[in-house]
Amino acid sequence: NVIRLSSVVIPQESGLYGHLLPEFERRTGYRVEVTTAQDVYGPARAGKFDIVLSHYQHEGVSPFVQEGFGEWPRMVFSSPGAVIGPPGDPAGIRGATDVVEAFRRIDRAGAKFVVNDQDGLRYLADVIRRAGNLSSGDWYVDKGTRGPEAMRAAAQAGGYTMWGLVPFLRLQQQSKVPLEPLLTGDQLLKCVMVTIVVSAHNVGGIITQGAMSLQ
Image (cartoon, rainbow, N blue to C red; front, side, top):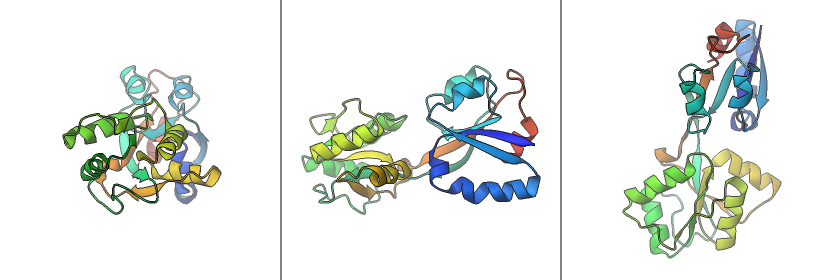
């Protein structure tokens, strides 16, 4: 009666599992074992987990499903993202609700935007830039930095970047950088999270009924 859940860290650190899982266990009689990691799909291929939860743009989603290790992803909730920048906000984007307009203001102000190469965020930044008819000039900086490194690069440049709100706030608790969330309201910034039940057809020992119940 144990469901093995492989999950990225955000839902755990946000407190969501602590809120949801006790009630699920009380209602169903299942017990859920949660393991968090960045590589959530590798161990699932080896039969160590019954269900996986990650953001939809995680690099492991497509091969996991297309190679037959997982059933079709189901969207379950979203994690908020943010445009992050210096407290002085030289581009004046604080409180804006349109991320495309925010990019235009950053460009007009001559400020820097540092691309976060975390899964999917470089693609999203490029989509937003193109939607604003903006060139990738000196203001748009892609150094291949990811996560905390991208935040530090933006802080050093006195510029802007993007990341998930939860991991950014976690970073601030660990090693504060002179940045803060300035824009969170645009739907484009939401990171969709999905569950994928591991396929019992190709992986042995999967508790399919329990995994589908949790999903």
